[in-house]
Length: 114
Image (cartoon, rainbow, N blue to C red; front, top):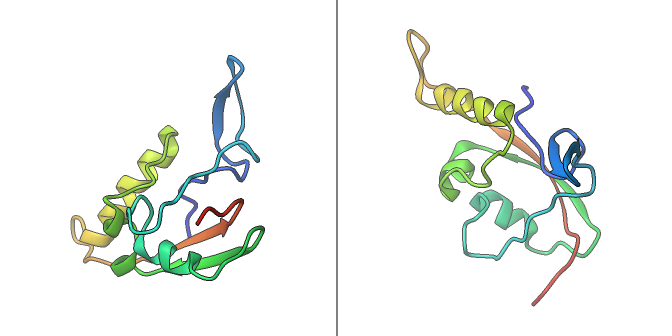
């Protein structure tokens, strides 16, 4: 597999206090079920999870980025380039046929609101 980008796991640099720092523990996302700001497969994986629970989820393209209008969008230049490359794999390019590449997500529930 190939690394694309992360949010809150320390692999990306974010602007913090006027300088670039690791995003470890700084970045998270609010997910509202049914709003599709994350892929449908992630929403499905969140069902039944409790506060503090972590899961690794493998998403085929049918329930991946395309179901959320390619959200969450990466903020780093490298992350954006990786998404472009991933789209090329899915659709095919040049002499390469389309390939149904899965994405792997590590998710953690930090808080719940019902």
